[in-house]
Length: 215
Image (tube, rainbow, N blue to C red; front, side, top):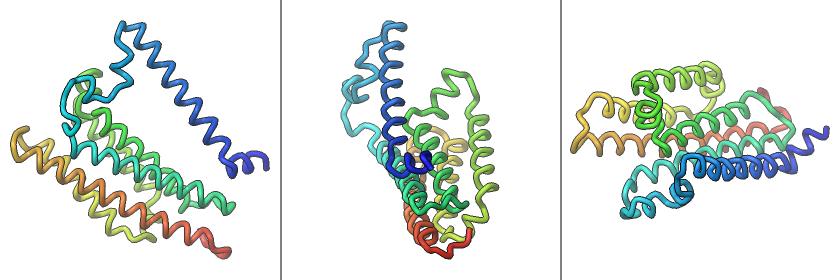
């Protein structure tokens, strides 16, 4: 009962959030001193550090905003749905969708599959794509029944657009038109992903709010 009360009043969110951020700040201080790097490198805006125009990477930044908007909506809808006292598979779809979107957003923000994993950890990009493919496949295997009761046409479109972006990245030479195709498909795919989860969050919340809801 106490655990449910803490969930409802949000104390766990505040405590977890502050603990994570304080740990992050402490980690930055440690890394800065240990590797003899200026703190500003880890705390300031990239454009300020590199002395470049703030609009550099504009479309990529828009995509990151869309990723984390989707993540926040999914988590909030899950939290709001839990206030009804239910925790069925439809709500779990929102929770795990938020976690998957968080992974994709962090990857996009910190260039994990483009730079960190292949260049720093020496994991080939194709292997990274394969790992992400397995994660996404597991997600759909777990929740395909719940997805099929939603308006999933937008999700299919999002997957097609994001897949087209990956295909452009892998198959086309890195110059000229390839960039606008890859990044254009990607931002359209992320936006469509956002629209799908807005629609799905509204649908699921309307379902779980009914007393006679069927899981």
